[in-house]
Length: 384
Length: 250
Image 1 (cartoon, rainbow over the protein chains, first blue to last red):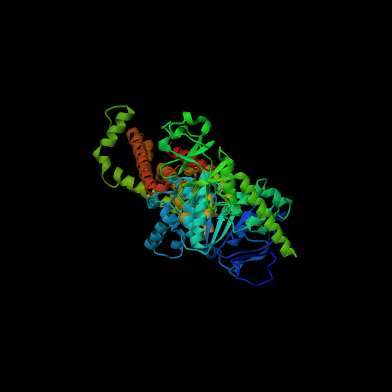
Image 2: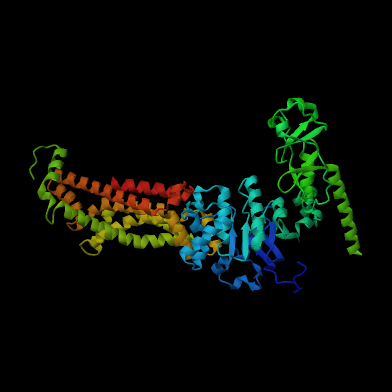
């Protein structure tokens, strides 16, 4: 917002310049919005319903026309471009997949290339490749949208948006209609895709968690179409600018913020282990209060408390473990591993999933405290 | 014609099985062809009027109130009355009858096309527009294929009504299957009267069966794979089509 007049740095992919949208003379749905959207990054619009985030998104491809102000796409005013052609130059993914029910999955994906005059065979070949890119089996291409699950439909929706290889992707709450497990999967896949494709993605969501997971930058909208804060997610969680943002970010924001702190320095302590094969052998005793149960490859499978060692003969008898902490993961994962473990010891694993030791919650807290002090010093130094 | 019995059904059977009635320019096959000719001409004109209008109103939503009330008015018109009115106003011959039949066929076709287009899931249309389809492409590549089931249903209902009602042509000119009904009444030949009626009924069922077949093959398998979203318009469109189809055969 502050850099509008400065032309230093690369040209933003999308620039909102004093955009206001009013419906029938009522209160503005979007109020004097000015912001720059970085090229090749994911920018998330987040906010409660009625905050104008979707309206703002839909003004980029002229599905909604602003009442005043201009939107520049790569320096060009979108209002001067033909709406249909402008829209074809951007991928669009919506909440309900919006797939055409009368066309096969392949033909749905090939829609925009076909409109652009790509021959059918070529467009279909490309569509089949894209199925693979979004993690779907190519056999699904012959099916119709009605025969797919919700998650599969959303993947097809993403493939369709990517089909013409547009530089910009607009995503309007694309994952909000699928269940949490599938949503997490889709989020991870999107990040994986983005690492290879480096598209300029504008992503709308009402879920602050999703915003902080996906966004390189997050724009928090307040009711009435006001842009409350536009910053890196880490900054929004750490330093919300006002009560609205603080309230919207929610009461777990301190915990969520740990997602942005690397856990490289967390101390991993050795832990006594017992193999699954040894459980049935009563002569193998355990010395620690909690002994980690591992398989032949060293992967953790729960805990064996010393007190009840005698009654544990198979893997099913062991106490189920908590979440795992992969070495080098964030402090949030480290802390969660420790807090969710029945023994209070978070199991740390290497990249292959083999147990390498345990982490303690108290030590994670120490690291958090130390990082906070460091940051305070850094802020103080820059302020001076 | 002399019948062996005074029983209606026996007379009908004898009339239908008499080879004399199955040949020549006044025979049943010729009358069936004439009849189908009028049905074809009527449907051609009715579709030329109703389909573009229905597509326009369905896609834009403009003029909805106008066509809904227009359809209501057209439905209230008695076809036979219109045949005589047009014949008096213009001239004798078949054209007044055809125009009267067009007035009969337009309402089901128009409401079917309109209901078909507006029944298409708005999210799908919105997605198509967002992807960069032009309005024309949205209409013909998204709305028409998805609304086709209901649209053909409207045409089907129209044809059925016209097949049954094209008998009125015989009042203006001795043509079509209506001739058997008019003659049968005039000369008190019940075998001819009921025989003609049965032929019309069989023809109506055959034509409708053919349309059902066309409907089946014209619809994308993707729309059969799932239950189409039950929009209120689609449901009412279906009921309308069914109701008018029943009205046409009775």
